Amino acid sequence: IGLVLFKRYYIQNNYNKVIPILEKFKLTTMLPAKPDILKCPHCGRLMRISALMSGNTFDMVQWSDTKCVTPMMESVSPVLKCPVCKKYFFYNCNLIIGECNTFDDSSCGHLSYKSLKEALRQLQPQGKDEITLRIMLLQGFNDHYGGCYGTLPRTDAPADERKLFDDNARRLLKLISENKLFCAEIYRELGEFDKSLELLNDVVCDTRIATIAGHIRERASRRDSSVFIVAGCGECERTAIKDEDMIVYKRRKDIARTNIFKRLVNKLADKY
Image (cartoon, rainbow, N blue to C red):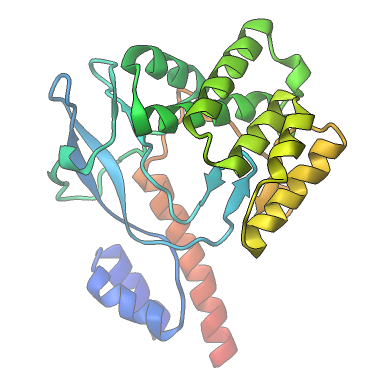
């Protein structure tokens, strides 16, 4: 009965009745909401941006360069690109003017490494916005040349890309100088292992951060500059975002629905 009711309400998009069923069987999953309507600050074009009704951190993976992948709690990119005027802008809730009446296709707006380089040149941000974009650029480089599973070794990076990485990383070091743990990680990725180890001696942290610091120290000691997983599910392939990639609502909805059905059937089988 629970499965039949759930399927009926979910297909009807009647989430007020879906959620109590999930709670009754102690199930949590990602439920997409109706997309937000966002207005481009440059040309006024309306864009559909993905939104969530609920989510969780199952299958989360966090990397040493602070990149965090949460398949069941996708977030909107801090920097977006207008599909019409092709200009970049920082995401702000004040740009949202409403929500769609139906569950149309939408995107989280994640940018490729190529687009991130264009965004930095166009926006020339300052303050916290500059830190945000430069961290994204650092992660974008590591998506291609991070030296971990799914990426190429750092030595395979072209000379111009390596120079861009070095310049970006050193600028980032000045902007986040108070964050000694992240600075130690950036020095390690730059191949300046002695500076990384020196900074780690000054890190005052709790148990979890101490564990991360220990992993950074271990890799710096053996002269390893590749990024690595600090939290999550074991060995995981690191993938890069491509220009043609679109995380659309329909695909996410189908995946979410399939996962819910499977887990609900298992719960009912265990119970009855």
